[in-house]
Amino acid sequence: MSETTTIEEQAGLGVWRCRNCGSRFFPRRLLCLDCQSPEMDEDRIHEGRVEEVAVIRHMIGQADWQPRRIANVSTKEGVMLTVGLLDDAGIGDTIDIVQRGTAPFGRSKSG
Image 1 (cartoon, rainbow, N blue to C red):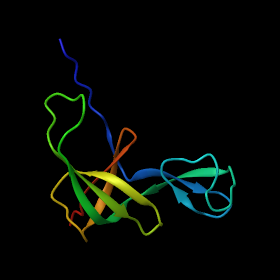
Image 2: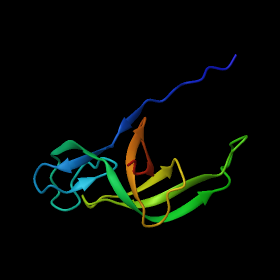
Image 3: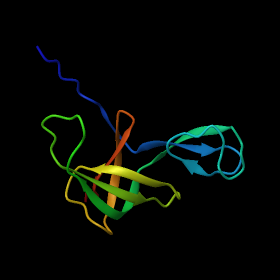
Image 4: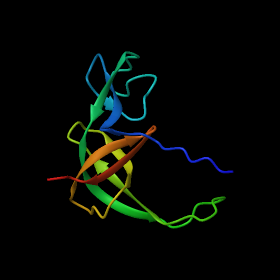
């Protein structure tokens, strides 16, 4: 018997902000790339702009793989992300960023 696990979706994505200079990172870094401080606080990013879109058509070792769209996204906070797209958002669109487990996803802005 197979067990299905539901991953909870959270609004925004947990990123890390340097306590010394304010630079933000995803994933977390041991040291800030700008000032080398080890002091980080958790922050959240909620939206971004789609810069590029690609499709992952094959995944080695995965049975029943379905093509998935991913995007490179820029944020006003200066963090560049690669996210899984949950809808047909395209280049230039502003998307809402959500987090499923530890992974970032995006969908077209509501409203």
